[in-house]
Length: 61
View 1 (cartoon, rainbow, N blue to C red):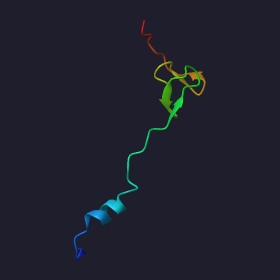
View 2 (spheres, rainbow, N blue to C red):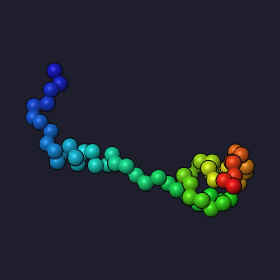
View 3 (tube, one colour):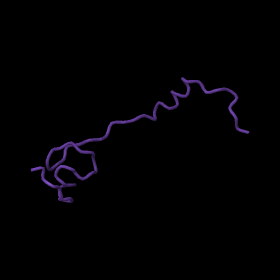
View 4 (cartoon, helix red, strand yellow):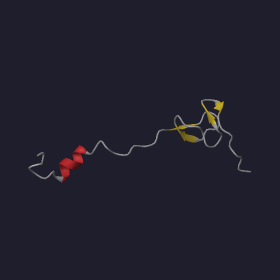
């Protein structure tokens, strides 16, 4: 059977899991309104994507 002969130490486990970490979200300014949004996503403030109106957004007035 595949059973480890010794227990994996904390340091060795943490070194192995080092690259598996959270990264920052890639945010860019919207080309239409300038709001900071995630890349490749329709802007929730103005509804534009790639310079084209994609979605109707209700005004906050």
